[in-house]
Amino acid sequence: MDLKEIQNLIKFVAKSGASEVKLEMGDVKITIRTGSGSDTTYVQQVPVVAQAPAQVPQSAPVAVAPEAVQETPTSADSDDSKYITIKSPIIGTFYRKPSPDKPAFVEVGDSINEGDVLCVIEAMKLFNEIESEVTGKIVKVLIDDSSPVEFDQPLFLVDPS
Image (cartoon, rainbow, N blue to C red; front, top):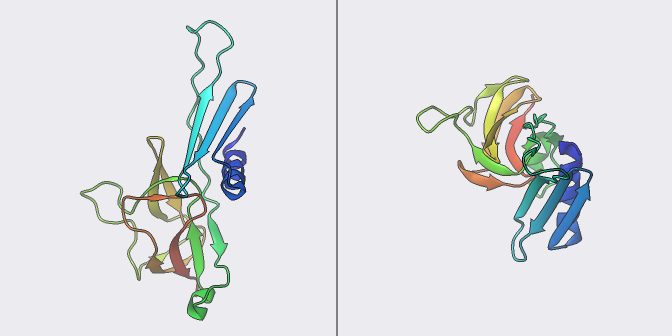
């Protein structure tokens, strides 16, 4: 099961209102739990061992393709309709800086190019660099540093002109 399928499954479970879903496919077991009073989603991926415990398979880290750039849906603010919203491709913790003693990747007013790193999202102890897929100017940062983010949550507004 690849990362995109897992993300789609998480979205489906969140929309369905189910509190817990368990899925086993071959040697992969996935448990998705959603909190009853919040939108928090936990994903646990555990390899199922069919042989002796001495031969536990190790899973390799999955590279995340930043496919999070989408047009902003119709909003109450007509000014925002001309901006592109960059959204989180994964669930994790949002960081604006590569480390606490370094400056932020981007600030409001900065010009960005396609491929520029905008932020880092930590998921399961892996730090995933989120790159821009558009060229433009950062208009607004929509999330505070060190905040948890959900899949498809808006992170930045970019003026493409």
